[in-house]
Amino acid sequence: MPSKSRIKRMDKNAEFALGMDGGGSKTICAISDTDGNVVGVGHAGSTNFQAVGKYCAAEEARKAIDAAAKAAGISHDQIVSAAYGIAGADREADFDTVVDYISPVNPAGMWLLCNDTTIALRAGTNDGIGLALICGSGSNCIGFNSEGKVHKVGGYGHFSGDVGYGEDLVTRALVEVTRYMDGRGPKTTMKEEFCKALQVENVEDIIERWFPDTFNPLELKRFAPVVFDCAKNGDRVAIRLLEKLGDQLAFNAVTALKHLFSNRDEKVAVVLGGSILQHSDPPIYAERIKAAVLKIYPNAHIVRLKQEPVTGALLFALDLMHGKAGKTRAANVHRSYALARQVGTRNI
Image (cartoon, rainbow, N blue to C red; front, side, top):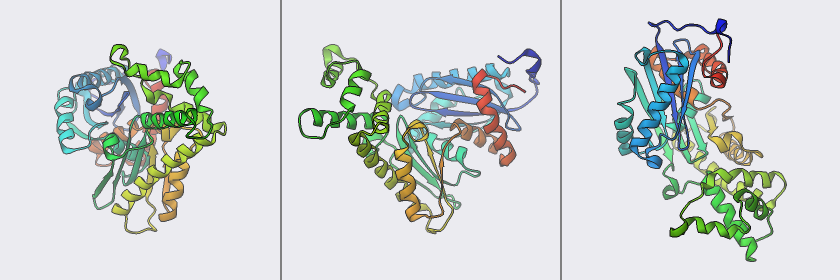
């Protein structure tokens, strides 16, 4: 923990901004002062009502806000602006639902709500213009142009043909394993690696987890690293699967770009976010997406997001507060957030 002599006592009259990244598996809340210096970070579970229901989503949002305010050492009434990027806010009806459960826990007088993909775009750009492609617990693709036009591709799970996210990847990988086992497909080391990871003697034994008498479904997305590890070690089946899904993600990105940016020479920003796109090794998805985008938009700027998307929510909140956060405040947010999340409060 930082020494007491280096922790600044918060002025009771000071004003603060709040940003929230409400994901399908976890929620992160960050609070900054008016200059973008992050002073508190809080964590909670999922705030995606489609995954956990409205009551649980509201409770987790409250927990995250309370934890961040406590870490910052401020009261809720000092938070004057807030931005919430919430997974599951896709259709107009979804936005209405999220407003219903966020409003009672929101402490700010000025606030906005958007999809969690949108805050990733804001985190990776100066102005929130361009395209964000997210792949982690789920997959989504949203773009904005300078005229205010928005175009969204997918984002509704398997009903909209979303691919490549954790559960989808692992499900497809297990199909490849089964095809190898029964002679329909080539050999793959994923068979042995999945047995180890799933702690089963035979991969097919996992079906028991979905039987009524032994119902205890696996959270398949947790095993996505198995596929990437096998690909890194040269498994051709794993590599081909990742290339195929990467190409489909790339097609989503190019489709959205064509609806938003008619000038193919434009220096459009394409932000890749989500746990899989940001952290996977080897970065096969990112490489396939980059190649496909640059083929159509040769001057595009591809950003594999290094910042946490919650910083984008915080920048939106600072936009509300100042009209535009500006480059200096944005730099403060990105610089200070990494320190703040390590100890809850920032060394200053």
